[in-house]
Amino acid sequence: MDARVQQFMAMIKAKNPGENEFHQAVQEVAESLIPFIEENPKYRQAKILERLAEPERTIIFRVPWLDDKGDIQINRGFRIEMNSAIGPYKGGLRLHPTVNLGILKFLAFEQVFKNSLTTLPMGGGKGGSDFDPKGKSDNEVMRFCQSFMSELFRHIGADTDVPAGDIGVGGREIGYLFGQYKRLKNEFTGVLTGKGIEWGGSLIRPEATGYGATYFAQEMLATRGEELNGKTVCISGSGNVAQYATEKVTQLGGIVVTSSDSNGFIYDPRGIDPEKLRYIMELKNVKRGRIEEYAEKYGVEYFKDKKPWIIKCDIAIPNATQNEINEEDARLLVRNGCICVAEGANMPCTPEAVAVFLNAKILYGPGKAANAGGVATSGLEMTQNSMRLPWSREEVDERLHTIMINIHKTCVKYGTKEDGFINYVDGANIGGFVKVANAMIAQGVV
Ligand code: NDP
Image 1 (cartoon, rainbow, N blue to C red):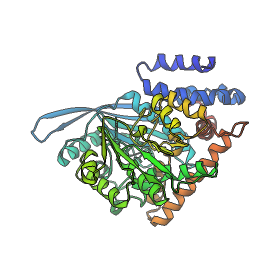
Image 2: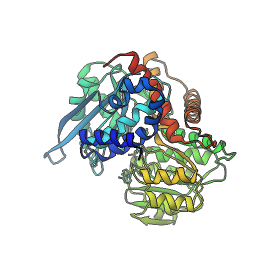
Image 3: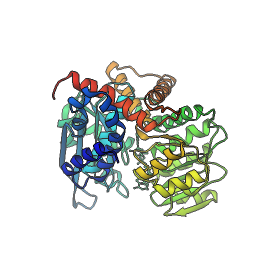
Image 4: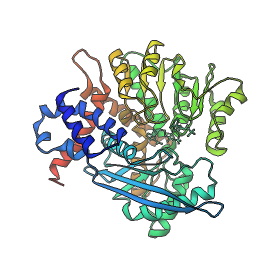
């Protein structure tokens, strides 16, 4: 490791002990940015990187709620307001038992760069709770969301901080959160995105992250004269991002052969066609069942406690969670002929896995760039809320597509090396950094 990066990381680790995912996310960015900052001393003098790694505000609170038996349950709620240099804090809420301060700080940190890349005026934030929605009744989820918002409402607002969904937070949870906010504030504003279409939501928002990651993969492939049509694609996850990545890849002629959840994955060599995808959506979004049931229904193989990366594919789109592709998985993917990895999830590849992809010079699109379509469309939802005018499906999809093409262009601009190889990690980190850094300098020492 570069001595300057090592020194910077020693400071970060000492200040944020035990926050491993946060260290990982900061180190990846520091490796891209420190050489760039050396060439542009105004950023060093203004201590931009040091300031970026310190949240503007961290809120931690108690979330007590009553379960269906009448017992009191206590969870911990968080909101990290990371950076507001270019707009209100913006980023999702995650409900998962693994949620802790370090994970949310890594997500909030990444969000700052991602939001900047979209070109829309959004700062970065992230929040959530260690509450596990799995196995809870709708009423329990509602009581939890109401309690969570009873504290969060005083910290957020349409011009201050605009949360959205993430793992464990979909349309149902956003509805309960929005209802409670409105009740407490007596205001109908665009304080959350991912809202239902009848009450301020944007068309294409549910589809946006998965569609956007697919559009990004399409752009990456085009740099090598390749296309999605006819390619075999391994997708992990079976939640929001995975479902719509599967839909768009299939529309563009790709064959998606895997789907997974935290218990294992299914392998369907003939491809998950639209009818089978409808089954997955019903299974996951309505019945809240397990992906294993797909294997029984369609008579395909189920791999318990395994990840899809053992299946031979041309393209991998990880859409589950952080660090789901390790070095060994990455080596296997490359050995099996994978030419492109587009991250639908946030930081799904370990640093060692990323190094394997970069050394093999395959197309590797980091989440900050590849999954930015979700937050970009959230930005479009905010615009529609401010105008009080909804756009059509086609209009939003076209804007999303254009934004993904532009993010790709930014990555090419800042990430192309002397030999012509596009390092999308450097491209996304530097491309996301410049606008935020310049805004911070213009706004003084704040
Ligand atoms: P969902 O909750 O809808 O789906 C998550 C999927 O990943 C589920 O299939 C879940 O399986 C699986 N999963 C979650 N945690 C783990 C784990 N620890 N190990 C294995 N599998 C796991 O979430 P989303 O689809 O919204 O989010 C997926 C990823 O995409 C996350 O990294 C998120 O941060 C990122 N992302 C999401 C955006 C959005 O707009 N929603 C925007 C940008 C990024 P199970 O059902 O068993 O829990």
